[in-house]
Each structure stands twice: as C-alpha cells, then as structure tokens.
Amino acid sequence: MIKKNAVGLWLHENKDRELRMAARVAGMLQEQGMMCLGIRGQRTADVNGVQALPLTELAKKASCMLVLGGDGTMLAAARACAPYGLPLLGINLGRRGFLAEVECPDVEDALRRLACGEGQVEERMMLQADILQGETVVGSYIALNDVTLTREEPVKMIRLDVHLDGAFVERYQADAVLVATPTGSTAYSLSAGGPLLTPDADALILNPVCAHSFSSRPIVARGQAVVRFDPLPASPHVLVTMDGQERIPLREGQWVRVQKSPAVTRLIRLHGRNVFAVLRRKFMNLTDLE
Image (cartoon, rainbow, N blue to C red; front, side, top):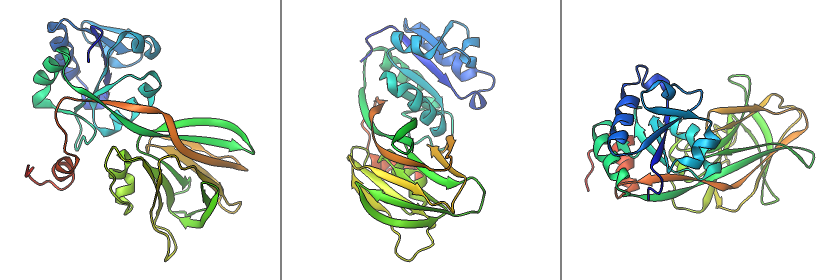
C-alpha cells in the first residue's frame, strides 16, 4: 500500500502537549526509512526530522496521514484530506477512538507493518452540504459523520420544512435535525435514538432530535437521496454544523441541501475489523467475545 517513502503527521496538540508521541512516531518512521511531513502551522513542525509543508504539497508527497488524537481529530483530518484522496491511519490519544485503528501500546508494530506495505484501505461515505440563496450555491461543505441544523440560541427549538427527493416529509419542530452517514450512525445520531448502520451501507439517516411530535421518527433513506431543509421565517438564527465542528450561520432566505459527497474518507486498516466487536468494546465496555 505504501508507494512513497513519506508519511504525513496530523496532531491534536492538546492530546500531546509535550510532543512525546509525535516525536516517538517520527523516530520510529525514520528508523524504517520513511520521511515525516508535518502541516505548516501545526506543532509537528517542532519535532526533530519533521519537514513542514502546506497540506496541498504534503498530499502530493505522502502516501498517508497518521492522525494522532481522538475521534474529533480524525473528523477534522477527514474533511481536510478527503479532497486529496489521502488515506488516514488513526492513533488513538483520546477516549473511545472509534475511528482510530491503533492504540498507543500497539504503535510500534503498526508502524512497522505500515512501512512494509501491509494493510487495506477502507472507503467511507461522506456528505456534502450546500447552502443556497434561491438557486445559487453560496457555500459548500463536507462531513464524515453528520450535518446538523440547530438554533444559535441555546435551549431553543428549530422549525423547518424537510423534503426527501422532492417529497415533503414533515414540518419539524425540534432541538435539531441531522443527516448522518453510516459512519455517523454511531455518533450524534445514535445518542438521538437513531439506528446503527454497518459502515459499508449505502444509506443516509434523517433524524430529528427531541422533536415536539408524537410521530417524528428517524428515517433511513438510500445513499443517493437528496435532503432539503427550509427554515421557517419564524425560526431565525439557524446554524449548519459539519461533524459537530464547523459551524455556518444561515442568513435570511437561505436553505440547505444535503446529499452524498463525491469525496470519500479513506481509512487504513491493519487488522480484520468486526464492527460489532468494536461497538461492544468502545461503547458498552464489554470484553470482546470473539
């Protein structure tokens, strides 16, 4: 799988304040004859032997990106790296680390296998959220887990009309309404009572959060479905949020279209992965029974 002798490093600085893990990873890679590249502006540039480049240049030289952090770090790296097709290998410095492939005690073995070209690349569906004024797209964003519409003011409900493939679904009055990918089915949507989807499912989840209704339920739609959100005039100050991280306020008269993105997140897998075993281990704190 490794076709170039360079690997990128993406770091959540608060998870590795003294850069010990970053320095350890860089040293191991260099021992394997690999060049380490950091993103200009990130503190990985302070690690010995790491060359700092803009992401556009790093993506041309690196075979993959090692992501040091938790799930939030993986989500941020996914949105940034997906347009370049750069595969990600997550090293978990967080708590659950559901998207990460490698735990800290296994780093040395994982990097050795990576340098030997072992592993497979798994593609994950992403979402594209377009913000429109009339029929003109004024902003376009991608997300790996979910796109969520909420009110800017805390403890305020959102009111909006929702269409699925042109058919009116419902006028929602809820704390939030989200569209989730199969990957995102284990995130915010799960907390909101949504279904679990296997990562390879070609489907979207439309899920109202705390809807003020007896009938509002999560909907599973085909992966090519197009969801339209029209905030009502009486529901101002709406936020569109990608993966719980990137927040865009809607202006008056704007609406949102969410659909499957042409971009995908590419995750490096070094081990066979039973998604249900991972769920038991990460979410239910049960010993793997496999």
